[in-house]
Length: 271
Ligand code: HXC
Image (cartoon, rainbow, N blue to C red; front, top):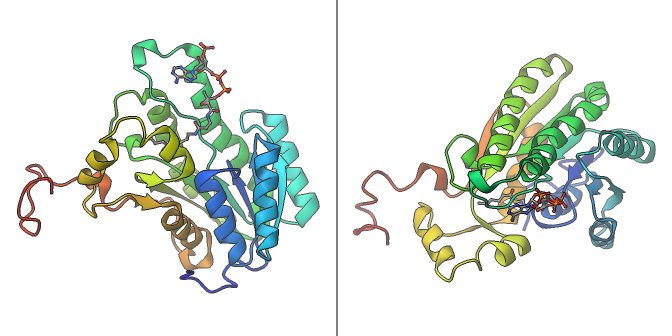
């Protein structure tokens, strides 16, 4: 099902990092489905090739540009390759992330650096390299956050610090690059089902998924499609007067259920 006109992004070129799996793949497929030509960036050429073939089989246009977002030279080469191939660049989605839960006092400097380099530095490197192309015709940058960028979460000091930096970057670049007609926004996805989260997260404890669902006012996990729909909106002209904003797509998760976890419409606590 599509809620958007099939030509919403026709003529646009979208570069998506971390596009080989999960949310990145879904955003790539959805943007291709409404006319964008897609540049798929990630470390694993085989995964990117799979996504490119799926998009082309569905009638879209996509090409793979393998790169590690931590490596400035690879980032520049990917952006140059996209522009050589497609002639332009209109939309950048900084989706690549690295994450694992680890107590702060046990986190090694390398572990800290790995996550900061992927999430914070990778987002800046790609934004910087994309700038001259996005500035040509007005463009859009979309960053992917997590609510612990402004809340808190044990075991996430590296990722939370990196995402908080990306939140600041979203606002700083929105203002700085507005004269170039580049909009910069972010999405903060809540708990969703993807192949990765099903394998690595929801299976970690037998009742974990049920417990999380009770924390979500809309009482279910989300889907990658629901995040991709919001990404389409913010990356398109439908959001042409929106910049520097963060849109949580999370069923109300970050707001919680209220201090007493009691809701007259539900009758009892935590049902
Ligand atoms: C403690 C760990 C660790 C773990 C890695 N490290 N995993 N420390 N617990 N589970 C440490 C290593 O020991 C090493 O430090 C350092 O991190 C670098 O590890 P490498 O494996 O050498 O790094 P690399 O191959 O570059 O991998 C980067 C990575 C990896 C971040 C560690 O997980 C990765 O590439 N992930 C990409 C995919 C991903 O994570 N996606 C999740 C995004 S989801 P030492 O000191 O030993 O050398 C997301 C939202 C989730 O972000 C929301 C959850 C609520």
